[in-house]
Image 1 (cartoon, rainbow, N blue to C red):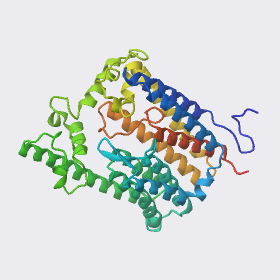
Image 2: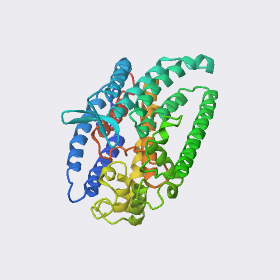
Image 3: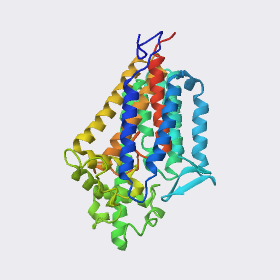
Image 4: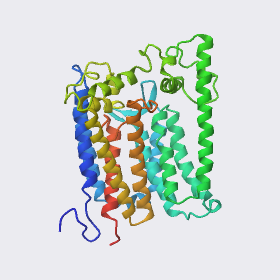
Length: 400
């Protein structure tokens, strides 16, 4: 009997690790290509983080995921405690936001850990709750929304609007799988439409404010947010306007819309088959800044060097990985395993859709990394750990 076959309820699914290793390899090569001639160290660091992530993946794969159910509260409180540490002296401010913890030479992004902790907590609540009519389900729904709302608020306060985006879709996915009545989702959709309208009106008011006072949106950051009722930073308003009307906020294309324009040039110049490994120029020559080329806009590097075919192959690997995650969710031995697998698949889906969408100009720029490919230690380790949980759900899919 093969190692990959089921043995007494145990087994090893080969699909997710193959996809994971393929994406990690693509990421390391792409990070190496994206670095300019004066900076050639990030790809080496990525190998170290990937190695640690793979070891954690294997450790989690051979561990019963039910341990997360038993310790859900502790995992959640630990992740919230890390988010609170952002506002202490060990919080590290960079690029205008305090999103990292720095102790010695170790840098950690707590929001990535919070995604795992909150997902486990939400799945734990719903697995222990009885879902029926909307009135009977309000306690469970309220508990889940509160559990997800706390890290969202703490992440937005950093400020890091991009990292806060995946939380709510994960919460709604868990509630949907738990068969919460449709009335709840209709109500939430109405609230989201209202909030979207408020944000759109705020962005329009911001544009009028700049026009009336003849201010430059790039040099007047911080002025409108003092009088606005919405807790949105001016640089976030600039991102919204640069997506809707880039010629308004950056008519010359040398300011906030620079990264997007260079990304589109990189994607377009790749053509059908790309320029070849290491032959891309947008990132290597610095047109696509090094601060974003290896993480937020790494897909642009892939599209330039491997073309449309290479980009579609990467998306196909992601699709196979997520489909495998949903397949394993259907095989889970209990509701907790089902919710975990669905939540992890949705989390990866959100990251891929938003990241690739913003490099192509069809989504606002939010700073969400690409799983297993973007440079970053915290995100790489957490992604590997998440897939390790899915593997554990597969291996322990039967009681024994």
